[in-house]
Length: 169
Image (cartoon, rainbow, N blue to C red; front, side, top):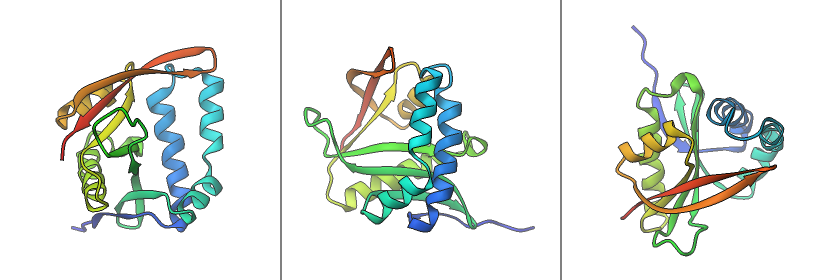
């Protein structure tokens, strides 16, 4: 019987292609039918391997969850962009390859992202999710997130509601 080492670590520029693949596949599963097709495609195409490599070289704080040598998911974290919320940190994105969803890896990546934010001195954290993305809402609620704000975002001609979840400490 073989076992794979599962770990979370800071992403390296050499991870860019795998992160781009995860972004592509996870966004297609999560947002198809929610975000208009042409807008979704534009958003996915903008975030290819070169975009991720550049972001990582410029110091973006991205964690990857690895299974052996394969990157199974990523979390992009940093300072909360919504200054009106009482949380210093934010998880901007947390995505897994679709085949790894629902297996507990998302919870592990979330907890490691939360530790990363705390170690950087950020107290509390916020996460935004589209209100129509029921799997994401269920995931953040199951992790103890409290609904703390509502907003909207426009994708082409469609305006969608989004919800913020917050965690203290």
